[in-house]
Image (cartoon, rainbow, N blue to C red; front, top):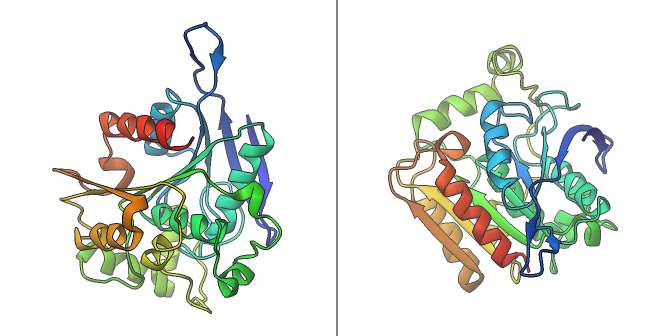
Length: 273
């Protein structure tokens, strides 16, 4: 099923629902697993092969919602590189619940990994008031909440430029010539305005997610964010967070093999309640 959703700030979001495979209990009664709402990385979209591969893996564990963040693919608007995207994810989670799913797992990669952290903090039990107003989450929290969170290859802090790939990304986002390359080379329309205010950082969000279960997944060969990022997130999450530091893994969806995705699926089915 494919449709366009509308966010709290009126942006049209291209979204896809796949019911996934039903499993059976001992009585052979069909039982649905959770619905996985997948938040892709920067320059991805719902139709990219690597996003479709992730969706196929999670479909073995439950239903799957994929969508294109604003400014990506067939969605409207312009990318704010992790700020207003929390509204796109909230719209997708709300849609999943409207389809009848009572358990929702948000899984984000890279930029999407930072978005699922902020989303869980904003739509959870104790959202910061100033962020809730900015993100437009007032009045929509029960439908948009998540039951478990998986953040893969996410940064811990904003404005990180410590690696060559991140320096290239900052050029793409902050320079007029870079935004032209983003639009025509990567099919990503990037907003020209700076963040105002600066959103809650991923590490600050991780502190506020409890009691929602949180899994942090990161490769020890990630070329974008070194391993101090996931360790900071795990430390901030405390006892409710779990860290998987994957040997030999690079960055985000392209580096997440099927075996890892199925382990994530198994974790989610167990933790989402």
